[in-house]
Length: 321
Image (tube, rainbow, N blue to C red; front, side):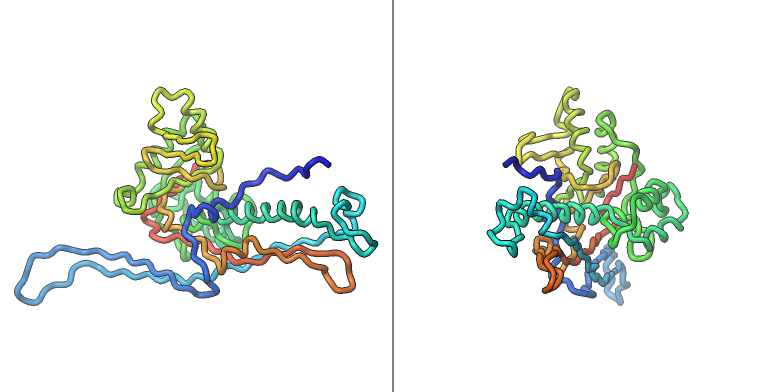
């Protein structure tokens, strides 16, 4: 028998490769605390000193959104398909082990890809409405017109993704470093990537934890085509091209390819972006059972929680074209 042709899907590299920080064991109202302080040097005084500097503590209560994937199917329809080979003899026996191991695995991959896409790009109805009501402007203190278009694109989701959280966070405009972009292609990828690199705060770029530049998948193609015609290939350094261990760098900053919307780039330390959930293994946990005791049709169900949280917003760069 020929193999079952599956859809081409992207694995959930965001979780599997630890491209962001995973915050687990979160049920409800877990506090994330950001500490933003300043220290001010002052002249010595033998008398009463004057307080200088600030202690700024910001608490954010995180409650991940509980979601589910649920689909019903009738295994009796498999009797006339290739899957009858893996059914036990007898009219009662209509469950196929091959269907469970191959097709349901493909369904799991679909869930993984959908989760990852929404983690980066999602926007709830409430957030879409709130961002649309903002007055766009060019400065850092205003939402960009392209940012508004990004949030409004596609259909509303159950969670706000990373890009959306950078634009609108905590009921107000995010304090991300805003970079106005354009449509990316192989001819301008070097110029546009330079804008992102130059916008990274120096203390982030030279800190102990190195930032990533998160890119949509098609940027990898743009870089490869750019490098073909480039006289010097040290701007975009690529190691082990075409191998499972391949890696891309721009001026020493590693690029990570995730399902961001086209023409969106994010520069941030991985410990500034959180995938919040109860248990990461919930992604791979499926229940397959009969719908009812007196029925033969079945269901497959997956339940989990998810929340995208971005900290130290002023240290993160968002490029939107």
